[in-house]
Image (cartoon, rainbow, N blue to C red; front, side, top):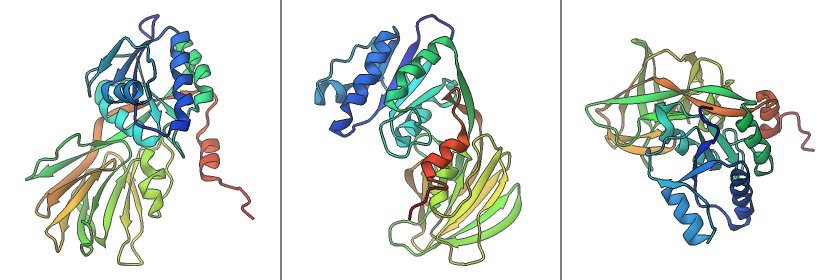
Length: 294
């Protein structure tokens, strides 16, 4: 790192009371290692005003207003995605501390955090670069960040009938999906929404994207994997004349006349990995591959 004192920004969210000990574990470790700590304002207010925790910090920040060496996400993968959206193109490495459930992105346990901090201080860690995708809309602006680390999906609204999604890749017509929606996922997001809809698992370092239909109304429609330098064009038709676009779970309503273009973003999200962490062992553990459930 550029300085002897590690500057750290913390993102988090409300959590169950029994996980309060995990917060103390993280904060105590940061104090022992002499880190400069900055906390997102809403999380700081929750810790100090709701949980009445004395949080030793050098500052409190709002949204994108931070300049640090490392970002720490405390929570589950949803919290990690929020932190990643705030980091954006800065290139600041993110370490995920898992106080949630599954935790593919937030994969450091609170009991492992002190060792992880020592590795951060001494440079004994690895960085994985994870691709990000972005969406552009013709004719209607998209509010908020257009970037997704996991996936971008077009979905029907509420109880509306299925939607038709005319899909082209690099200008070549692929197919018109008759479905409840279509998910475009990165390798990082392949273990998220896409997986729950029958999509494949893609290793994070692969340079691919996957298109996975949601409840397709045809048995011969299957997910397809394409190069991540591809440009995807979507035209949606809906009986309700509108649809949802979900960007890492954050959804907006768009008119059916809106055409979408999805492509890889011009930056990567850097994720801190402890030395010795292996993707396939994590996959076996999280997915319980090979476990005898009898």
